[in-house]
Image 1 (cartoon, rainbow, N blue to C red):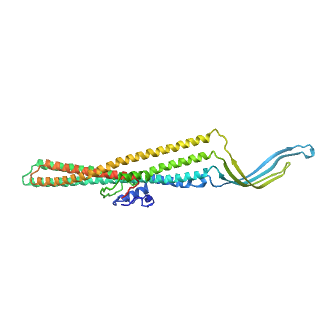
Image 2: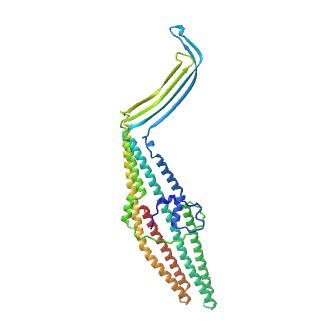
Image 3: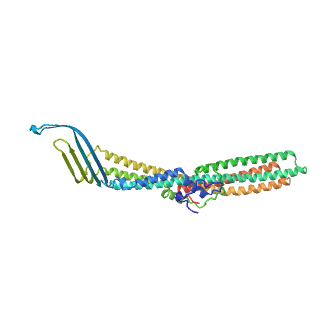
Length: 434
């Protein structure tokens, strides 16, 4: 058996692939993983997290900015001095102010906040990938459940068809007996009515099959009225061990892993919040240029330019204990994330145990149901032979047919229940396999 690796997401299949071809289980899973809109959404979330996972977002890279300003101004000027000879007056005197600067700064230290932020972004990226796996795992689970439901309904339809074949045989026997005067019209009419009822039951079952296929195609995100053929049987893996499943729930279940990632993320947030209470040191450097030119006034030209460099130290002294309270809230959020993880783990463990109980019980019932089905088939054959020899009545045949149909219905349902429990167990353990 081969594992259903979620690398299938990259498999390219044409949207109209199905046509009228036979749909296998592997093909159904691949098509669903390729076309599902929820999977595409989850993949976009992963891409977003990858983009954000950088030292620039964390605040660890230099920041460089530049500015340019050119201002033209008309000014009316009146200047009086102690020496009247220096007095000046001007109307609409033009002046120009041109300034430009480029500068940058880099954070040197802030209590390891940048490093912690980068680690948090990496944890978020890993979490989104795990969530993508979880979504894909759930989709595979739903596709397999619906796929095997179609197989189950088709298996029951085969039982109904076998019963119809027996009914046709009975009708032929009655017609042959009537031709030699050994059967009356009542037997003929009853046989025909029973046959029509059986055909109607098969037609109703075909509706169930068609609607099941429509549900399956909807899960695959393809045209719901596509013609599709499903030819398969329900095979059950009998080697699942509860201890293996419970161990995998803790270590491999993507939902549990994502919950653990959330705890880690919240712990990083705690450290980032605590780092706000530490001093921060940054270095900056740049170049300034300023030129002011006036057509009138005391100063006709003022030109300044040159580089600068410096270090800035910020020390938080008191801000109403805001940082401390934020850190306390972050610690509570971490505890809440741990409680969510523990609750999730408890629920999955409980569900795994219940599904394993159903799995083992249905496996035992499958053997009994199969034996009962084989016996009912032999009984129907025997009654048909007795009916041909006029040693059994139409009622006997009808009862044998009913027993055969009930046994077939029970067998396919118990088999499906065992398979459903197997699929659920493998989903919890992240071990969905062929």
